[in-house]
Image (cartoon, rainbow, N blue to C red; front, side):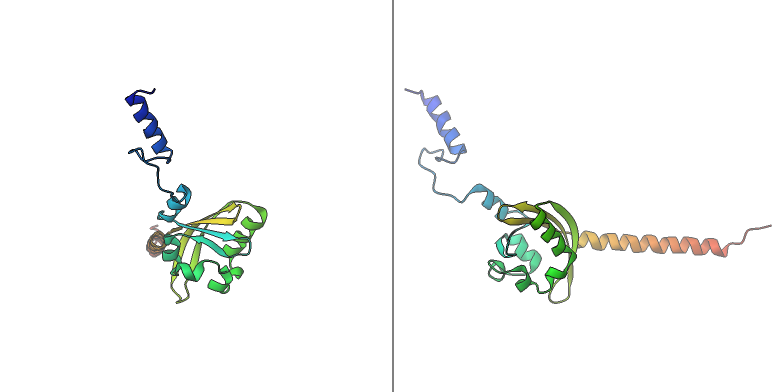
Length: 169
């Protein structure tokens, strides 16, 4: 017969494996851990199947794409975003889907209202099709553009002040 300490140790190990609560009672049926992890990430996570339908999206994807879950799930990408199949980003998705290769890219996305956003995309082949991890980087891209403009302005200012100086003889 196991000692009380051994029994508690076994109960804690079983609880860690998700079989029972630390109280000793059976654990309630739970959603698989990977899905609950994906659901709660700050990064957008989506799975696109071989027919180019959205089969999984987390809340971050809904914020990124400015769409509801009902507008995406079960629908083809081209239904939701007409013309997407003609974009460079879709060409990378297609290559990942067909060649079963991983890719990373920064993509500027134009929303239906005409506003734009930037996303760092990581695309991985999965048994269901492709998995896309997205991070919204619009603020970073705007800051980079401001720095580039400032540097270009500074370079123009420096070169024009040099041009105005004449060498003394």
